[in-house]
Image (cartoon, rainbow, N blue to C red; front, side):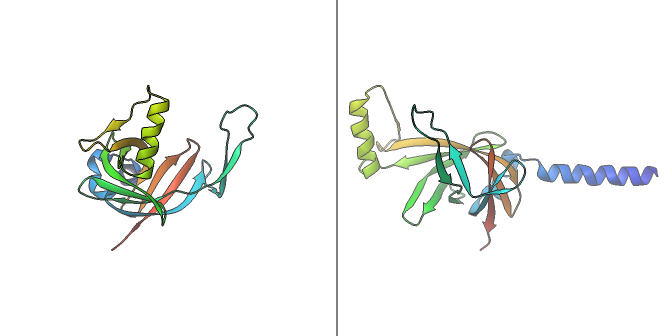
Length: 170
């Protein structure tokens, strides 16, 4: 009986250790190409659409399709998030904490979005954007990863949902 208890305790310890996310020790597991699979709610049910209340007077909540970008995390510290074939973000990534990855998008100053930021800064001079050494704008966001294995990644989305990814093997 004592042996059975020890074996059960050992297996439980191994299983718990596999689900715990610690990016500081799992950096290599994060690197690769991640394909978006689905969005799930807290009960594990797949979600196709999400209602968002923008908290604007007289504006009804909007409905958005529940989706996520495909993500390529490179070993050189760069990334690409692909939202559509014509819409992607690129920049640099870093591990922010044991469960968080920060993605810092680089917005070229001479791009359409860069020119829009310049015009916006003229209207709102107190709004300052961080820039890199080349004068490009930087916009950072943070993903909280709640599960990571060699084949699956789960990322918090809109606080109430989870983006599920599968790693693409090459």
